[in-house]
Image 1 (cartoon, rainbow, N blue to C red):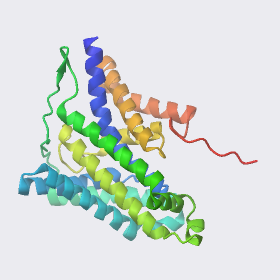
Image 2 (image 1 turned 30 degrees about the vertical axis):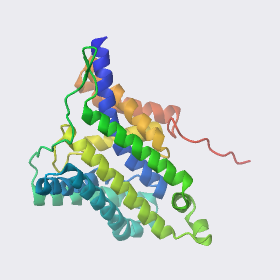
Image 3 (image 1 turned 90 degrees about the vertical axis):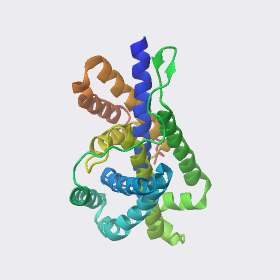
Image 4 (image 1 turned 45 degrees about the vertical axis):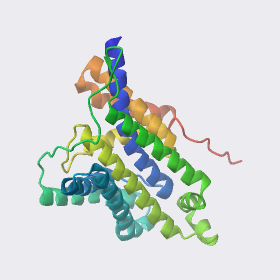
Length: 292
């Protein structure tokens, strides 16, 4: 039982990280109806900005603020310069552009900063607290989980209780009708990309201190797992992203602990296929309207 509880707490800690990153994918899907495959590379770029500020000032919180602000700017720039011109050709064009952007960002980061592993300090203690002789969550894990839940609450308020959030969703679902109703679709898309990149920057600053370190490919595997978490929970549900992230973290922890780390990629694939076959929209997908 001690091993089970240890794996459970370890899975929750990892799941909180995946949930934070899955939130960025859900946000861009709700705002623009596209999966941003460059989200991981963009998060790494903003993490470099954040930790440059940390190195210069000694303050993690100033670095976090700088990373989020640079994420907002980078997201808006990507939408204005690239995605806006790729959009009219259909979502596949945007996917191809995003994949190309991954290669460009990783190449530029490698040329500017090199590909060496750089340790990244955490703002809180990463040693797990002990409960009943079992290692539980660390103060840093609690901070990551709290940050993810806070972002979920803010996104829920944005999309359901504010005019801006409703305009963003309308612009994503029905851009032509939204234009007729006076909604500036272009501005809403830019805002959606900026917010998604800002949340991705936050996720990057949460992920890097967990042992990944800072290098140009730091988010590659995290993106794959976070994408699985977003699909499991439902790409249109911020709550689903968090639940999916925690669920994926638990499953991967149990599989690694009981079957070995070599089976982890297979577990991710099986989980993704199972959800797509049983409930393609995700566990928290909304019921579709029936058309007679």
